[in-house]
Amino acid sequence: MRQRDARVFALTGATGFLGSHLMDALIRKGRSLVILGRRRKGMSLADRVAALLAWFDVKDRGALVETAEVDLLEPRLGLERHQYDVLCGKVSEIIHCASDTRFSERTRREATETNVHALPGIIGLAKDSGARYFHYVSTAYVSGPGPAPEAPIVSRTFSNVYEETKAEAERQVAARCSLQATPFTIVRPSIVYGDSVTGRSNRFNALYYHVKALQLIRDIYLNDISQHGGRKSREIDIHLDPEGILHLPLRIFLARRGHVNLIPVDYFVAVMLSVLESPRSGRIYHITSDAPRTTEELAAYCERFLRIRGIETLYGEGQNGGVQNPPEEIFNKLVRPYLPYLSDTRSFDRTNTNGLAAGFSAPDLTYDVFERCMRYAVRMDWGNGNGKSDAGVSRASG
Image (cartoon, rainbow, N blue to C red):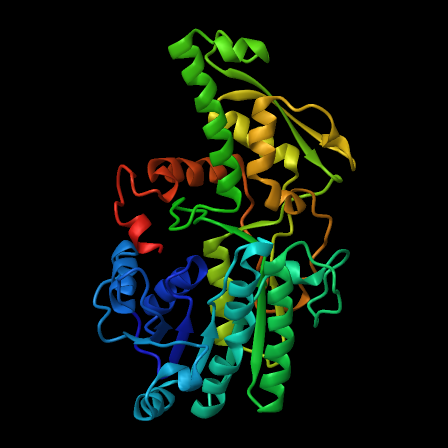
């Protein structure tokens, strides 16, 4: 482990996907951290962080990591005055990763509380502690349709509650930090999957969700064929070919041709560490891929991995108005919230990000990388706690 850095980072969202990987990387670089969060599901924050660090196989963490159970919606983060003063005396930089990533309109109140209403408290901590910088983790999809500059948001068009609340959060971060003279940065990752080298992940959503849905559908019909002679399968021409590949006719209905912008979590961490090393106040950084994948390419990856054939992508408004077969009904219902990201046409400016380091581009999502990540997800039973190894992954990721 490297020599300890003098700065102390306050980190929110450390028990989430991006925050946990950033926590691991900072500890390995010898950075001191105060993890801010809440008790959840009967587990203390300290226990949740300890479970995650065990999953990351971080050793000798006691000298670098401490936890503080807080409520960002309460005055002084819910702490007694002397506790808050002690916290302010420790913190020299803040990284705000905590967010509610759900898309549904049903969760608007919770998303607004977490993504917007919690900001005055954590930004207030930056002021009261005299923090050197406030770093905010947003999303690349706050930009709205069209070209996406590394600049403040002007669009008011969003695909879901998550994008809308993160956009409002960016506006508040810029306004509040500027008003109190706290230097700040904003980073905007696109869709993040597991480690491109190891395939490991402690979250299995986004990209994984589509593959899991296809595996579920595949297994329904494989079971029908093996246990019931294919009675249901024959009705819609689902069958096994001589090579053992399942012919599964399934149309995906999208509004337009586009692409899916995907980055591995190790790339997100690398860019974040570079931002933390040489921050520029007011800068916005797109952590995105220069080589996004089309839906057809990803469908081909899924077919190869799951040993199925028959996925077809149809484009145009109203394409899904006709009769769908049962696999199509299941799949399109399961992935409906994600459909805008399967046909995205945005191009993300990366001038600021490319200026951090020469050749700073995301690893290519080849089939080998895809397979590595999906094999790990299957082995972990998609985070359901029934994995064949790394048994703590589901518990740690909560």
